[in-house]
Amino acid sequence: MTYAFQAEGLVKRYGKTIALDGVDLAARPGTVLGVLGPNGAGKTTAVRVLATLLRPDAGRAVVGGYDVVRDADQVRRRIGLTGQYASVDDDLTGTENLLLIGRLMDLRTADARVRAAELLARFDLTEAAGRPARTYSGGMRRRLDLAASLVGRPDVIYLDEPTTGLDPAKRDDVWNMVRALVADGTTVLLTTQYLEEADALADEITVMDHGRVIAHDTPADLKRIVGGQTIAARPADPARLGDTGQILAAVSGHQPESPSRGVLTVPVPDDTAFTEAVRRLAAAGITMTELSLRLPSLDEVFLTLTGHGADDRQEAGV
Amino acid sequence: MTATLTPPAPAVAATAPARRPFRLIRHSLALAARSLTKTRRTPEQLLDVTLQPVIFVVIFVYLLGGAVAGSQHAYLQFLLPAIMVQTAMFASTAIGVNLNSDIKKGVFDRFRSLPIARSAPLIGAVLGDVIRFVVAMVVLIGFGTALGFRFGNGPLLGLAACLLVLVFSFCLSWTSVLIGMLVREPGAVQGISFLIMFPLTFGTNMMVPTDTLPGWLQAWVKLNPVTDVMEAARGLMLGGPIAGPITSTLLWSLGLLAVFAPLAVRAYRRRT
Ligand SMILES: Nc1ncnc2c1ncn2[C@@H]1O[C@H](COP(=O)(O)OP(=O)(O)OP(=O)(O)O)[C@@H](O)[C@H]1O
Ligand SMILES: [Mg+2]
Image (cartoon, rainbow over all chains, first blue to last red; front, side):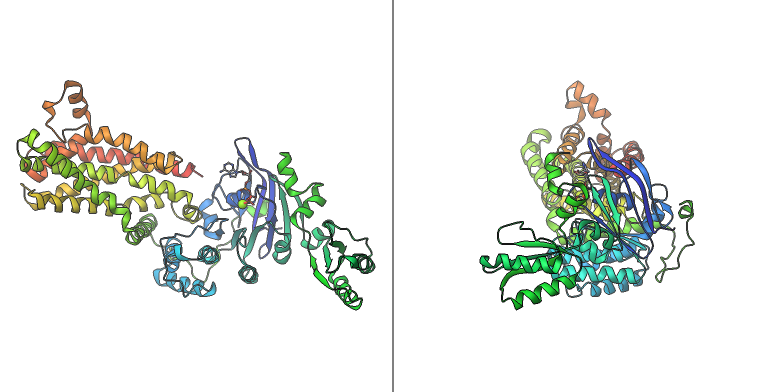
């Protein structure tokens, strides 16, 4: 099987910290690999190795058939990187930022101009194109950063937590952009702390924790392991908690749990159960202040996969 | 697995990059243009090189002129070429500070992920900094002229002096780049650079003729290459022997460039 990029046994140490402890990552061309993990899992470190910014202490990584250490220049011709922290030049305008990268990517000046205008339009930045990036909002900077990583039409693009700090509408824009890239045949590595995001975009998900891969699966299989979706319900009148519980038990076939006072949660196999629950609660005349269907949080994923939450582990210093 | 190690046939992209020669030069110039744009947008960056020569001239000429040379005008003639060298040398320390803080901001991560030579962002920054030297010299000569300074050797050789100082400062910049790459904090870069610059610039015959100095200091002044640069600038601007000092200046410049530019690039590669 050919991979657009593949890392095997990556190890990276910073003093006593082991940022990567034998990490394998791979994605087939034209797919999205979601890398899911809490703070400090090693996501950024792995991306930096794949983007030729960091030499691994052990292991190796190949992008488009080229080794990230030995053939770094060939790799750099094929990748785009949007780092976790925006790497745009604040003193330059949006256009100047993109033109500079176009020139450094050896585009002809005319081509670089066309490409810059095209990308600015695509990321809804045409109006702000002539303003220095320091006047941009956080979301605009992220978008300019994304645009900058696309100037050279990369085969593989790394997006390190691309939606952190974006409002829901802009987050949807980024999701749509990722889908458009994949439709064009680009391979995407996307890191995130949200199972929801990985589920929405990724063909395969690698879950990382403390520098190790603790799971690798398709979103569907991963959800099967960690319990799929959950209904959370909070009746307006606490006295109706019992009735609510009965309905939830009936539609899901599980006994609901109460993670906090006045709230009931129950795992469900698919969203038809949710529709059914909504119908029956309405029929019983129970008013809800909260009724939602959600994927397990990262913490719940970790609880299932490792037996402890994402944060507990860090506090315990294991 | 082994199959993935064979490079695939290069894909013909819609905008195939133009394969032109002199890529390093082109990339460095594009990055130098970036520096210039940044300077244009934030001209306050040039405040130090604008004020420093004026302050030095005022302090030294009026404070010491009467005592050292008997007349302030004579002392201005003697001092200005040396102050030009000193100002340019201090101006060359800014680049290490700027690069050091730039690298932290992530813009350099972008450059590192592009298929350009590792040295291009550094060369670009050094070239872009030439504007600082030019501004410093123009201000200094303008101010000096207003106070009565004259090129005793004609404007052409005066210009040659400026160019020589420019070449020397440009080569000296690489020591600042190296410090900027090795040290963690911008503030520390500034401190170290100044510590180096003080004995180099003041430990010369900048303010008084060498033979008036105590013996141990004379030894240092004669050893210090900056003395030669100042002598060369004086010779070109005012008249006097030039062949020796100019040769020495150029050799030192070449030496600084040959040693510190590769060291700086190496330190930049290692820094992650
Ligand atoms: N330059 C560095 N020096 C020292 N330690 C580092 C360095 N970079 C990363 N680390 C450590 O390596 C580990 C992994 O860091 P990394 O940034 O890869 O995590 P992450 O998964 O990207 O986290 P986040 O979600 O917070 O971005 C952390 O413990 C971090 O403190
Ligand atoms: Mg990170």
